[in-house]
Amino acid sequence: MSQDFHPINQGPDPPDDPAGLAELRRMKRQLVESLAELSSARDEIAALTAQLREYPEQLEAMVKERTRELEAVNRIAATVNRSLNLDVILRDSLEKVLDLLELQVGSVFLVDENRNELNLMVHRGFPADMVEKMMVSPINGEFPGAVALRNEPVLIEDAGAGENRGDNILCGQSELSSCVGIPLESKGKVRGVMCIMSDDKGRFGQQELKLLVTIGREIGVAIENAWLYEKSYAHSKKMEELSITDSLTQLFNRRHFYQKLKEEMARARRQGHPLTLLVVDLDNLKDYNDKHGHVKGDEALRGVAQAITASIRHDVDTGYRYGGDEFALILPYSDSNEAAVVAERIRKTFEDFSFPETSLSLGLAQFDFQESLDDLVTRADTAMYVAKNFGGNKVHIV
Image 1 (cartoon, rainbow, N blue to C red):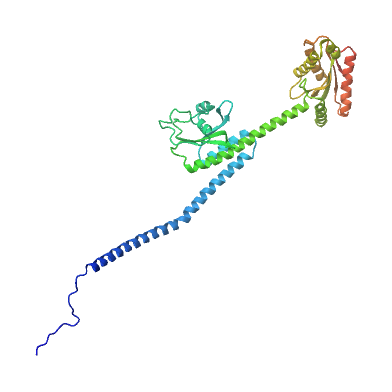
Image 2 (tube, helix red, strand yellow; image 1 turned 180 degrees about the vertical axis):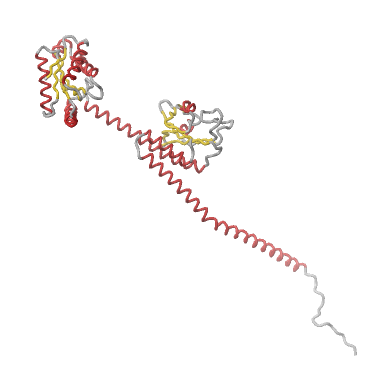
């Protein structure tokens, strides 16, 4: 009896399955893409890890640089704000900026609003012929005037380039290759311009430019403060002068006379030098006023002041309108004989003026170191009256 034998687990041939094959291929592609993405991710992670390792060093370098810049600004601000002298501010600020940038050539201009120009105030490192040409620069579209005109920094990276050559005196010079100008401004108003030069092309970067602009604001504020102080000081001096000056004759007044005489008497006692007081009276002023009018009388009083001013040592002797038609002079370092020469010169000078029927009576007394202020004034005044009682137009010494 024959039997049919079949292999174990052997079945019929699998039917074709196109859909299954396509799915396998798709899965294979996805696997390959995933592996590629994973590899790229590993590379990115490695790069980020390297950057993170470098970041602390970069951050430290940035912090150090920023700290250095802030310290520089603070140093310059402290320098320019410690003085109210404009010349000192400009000189010190230029030196500090040049030292900070390790450069040698720079200048500072101040704005003259009335003339619409820049005036050179301080400079360093320029040849003499350039300094002469730089003394005045117009405020226009050219460097450095453009800085003041626009109130913004101007950077010239190649001063010798064709478009810059000949535009202004600072460009086209063989020893200067790049330059930067910064406004020195306060409250939105340009007070001046600082120009810094280098012999290297492209020497100034944007970071340095920003730093210089910050420094420029500090300098601008210091300039404004100095100007305000000078105006205030000049005003206070003017008020002080008005308070101690006789408005008609422009000599010092009676109040200042007593203050000054007290000081000079103390100095004479301390140093042992001679001191003489001279009192002057304008003879016949009342009759002159009655005959010619008070306007002419005032002219005669001014004539006395002119004779006094023309006859004394300036910055040593001082003249005063003591009151009405009386005048006084304080003559330090002069004894009675020397003072008599001055008195005679005053008398003769006034006599040569055209004030007919008037003359001067003069009395003088030398300080004896022991007497009081009132005693000295009384003696000089008495000497003047002696001269007057003997007909006037005389000098009398007590």
